[in-house]
Image (tube, rainbow, N blue to C red; front, side, top):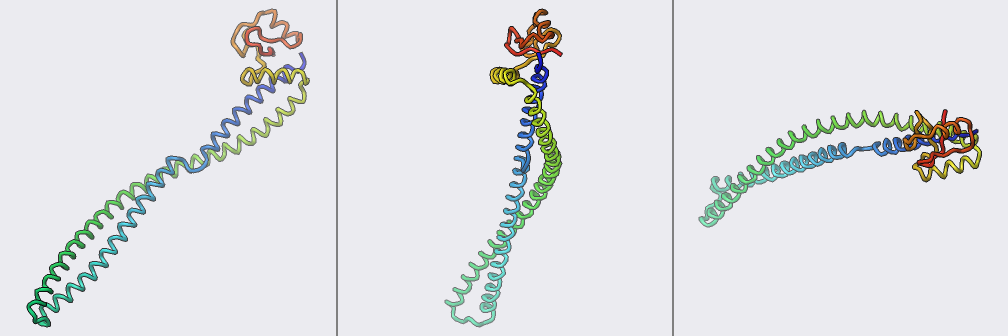
Length: 233
């Protein structure tokens, strides 16, 4: 029957288009920052923030220690310089110096701990940065490929849309309507080729007489099993 070949070609083009749309959606979904890259970046930024905080803390402690050391030096000068003569005042000054020295010792310990923590953070940061750079390089390579794939798929869709429109224009309206109705019921496959005596749609054998009818073009012949329109090259 005239038009069946165009119907089969239309179905092939529409199935190809559906596959291209699926691939395009997947490629576009993968464009942009990946979860792996985002995780690596967040870990790197977190450690950078931690190291910055540690360094700021150490600087603050060092400034505090500097001021405290000046205060201790001033107190010791008064203590040993003979400026203070009152026993009570001497006792108070000695007690104050003991307190200041204890505070100084604690500050020095805190600074040492801060320096150690900073060193450990720097080591972690080096590893995280190397990991992030490796992940980023992989991601950038993938993005380049995906960008190319998206462009190719969009161009393919343009070509397919043009072909589909052309094929539709060549098919008689009643036949096109019957095909579209079957496509809705049969998962987008309303016509099936006969190959090696089997219906391509359901893989059931087609009687020889039916095959001959299809070859002669005796109208629209459907598969007795799945109901699809049959076509043979």
